[in-house]
Image (tube, rainbow, N blue to C red; front, side, top):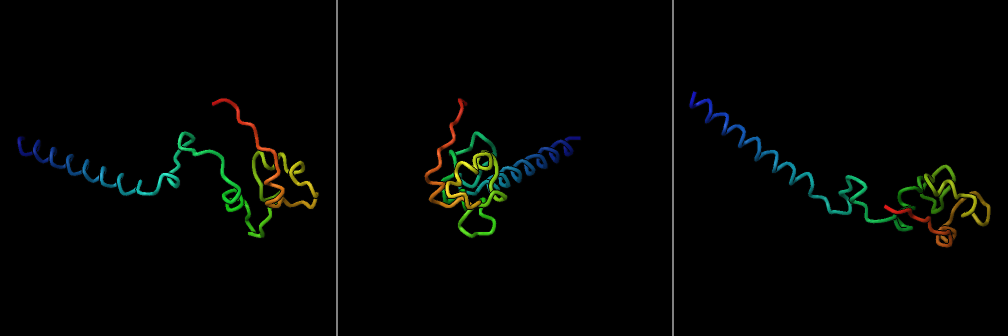
Length: 102
C-alpha cells in the first residue's frame, strides 16, 4: 500500500512538471503574436496591418469583397473616387471609427 502511494506521488509530480514545461514552450511567442482574447488587444491595427490582413489579391487596394466589419459598412463613404476600390490614400483620409466605453 505504501509503495502505491509513493508511486502515485511520483507519477503526479512528473505529470505536473511535464505540463508546466509544455505551457512554457507553447507561450514562447512574442506578446504581439500571443493574442488569446479581447483583453490582450493592443488597439486598432495600423494601415499596413489592415492591408496585410485584408488585401487578399495583394494589389495594394481593397475591394468591397475583401473588407469586413465596420469598414465594409462605410465602404462607399471612404471610396471618394467611386472606383470600387479603397486605396491607401483614401484610407488615410477616412474618418476614424468612434469607440464606445469599455
